[in-house]
Length: 409
Image: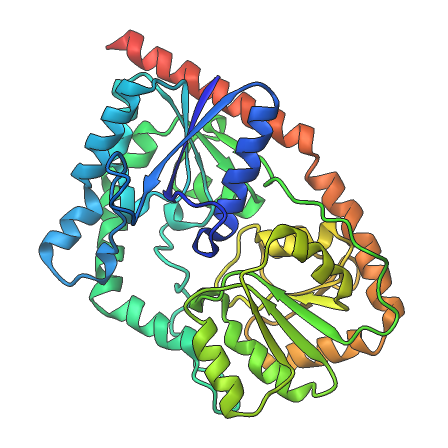
């Protein structure tokens, strides 16, 4: 089988690619190990790659033409057509294409008789255009630290960019552009499954398939560790600024931040200004080093105020047998039972986050018990062979739909 992964970021190893890039890379490697061929198509910033469309942030441009490009990207459609003429494929696996590559590529795939599968990495198909749909967004008391999440939420929800995204989503749902062309939808959570059902996607076209998970080997739970670890992209939707008051209020702990992104510099400046010396910004960390960081951590912290949908860092940490502290969200409760396989705190509540972290740092037995329960839950919910086989079955179903479409024309 020849499989084409289509994602706005081509560099799955880069910090910008985040959990989606990790998903694409892991799935591609698994399919190749089974004898399939995998290819990639997406946006680039390198002019030396003329076969791929350029990455443009149409959301930041305040012009009618930019809005049109958010709906239809001629460059992406034309270059995908040329790509498929050079290298035919059997199935295309779509990821985050939205206002970068746009649904303009979908009829191109259909014309070439390609089966189309799409993984719902977020809930935009259900009308949540960005991470910031909890409105009104209240600013939190972060001890004088800028609330970047609230500022970004107000800008994206009320400014021209937010209006453009909302308009784009409304038009696409009205025209049912994705519903018309996507053969099979892959949902990593029951939450995503339910959200798509509410939009009218037939259950026969939905597959509940958990994301592949890395299983880093770690040492046993450290006896006296005072390290709290954050692993992930430093972007406003992840609310990493919550780590600053966490470190400030737990002076005896070390808060390590493994990740990169636009929030790294502001976080470092704020930590220096407030003399929070126990916050360590490590930057982008490779997979090998992450195993060591998990092994040294007392607990792994998730800070997102946006609604998460199968975050890679949380799953990796649980697979490594680490205790996870996560916001109390519907999607995350599919893995974490508070006090059983991890700890939950009210989303965005700094006081509660500090209290939970303090409790875990003082109780090694609790950390050990929660981490020991987390690992088998990941094993049970994310069996590698089962995930790979389920994805292949989704590919085969999408290819059958494509064949029937071609025969009916």
